[in-house]
Length: 100
Image (cartoon, rainbow, N blue to C red; front, side, top):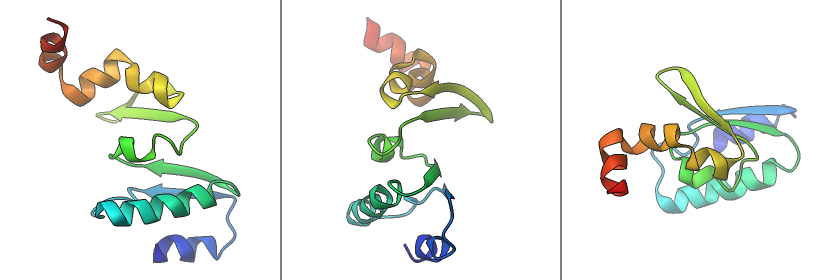
């Protein structure tokens, strides 16, 4: 939160965050999420995050990458339902088992 505060002191129009939730407890994640909700009202956020489920309600657009390539982008609900995204997260064998 200190690093976010320092960045905000420069009055940016765009804030890039690289895994802001990494290594945080659930309580700390809630605090940072609350801060991000306030910030996103006044400037554009670009967030790189592995914990997609924690930020899905914050973002207007979600892009998913696998091995350095974009595999899907769009509205969060649509992206999370995309077969290529589901396969990337859960694996093809898991997807096949859930179908049968």
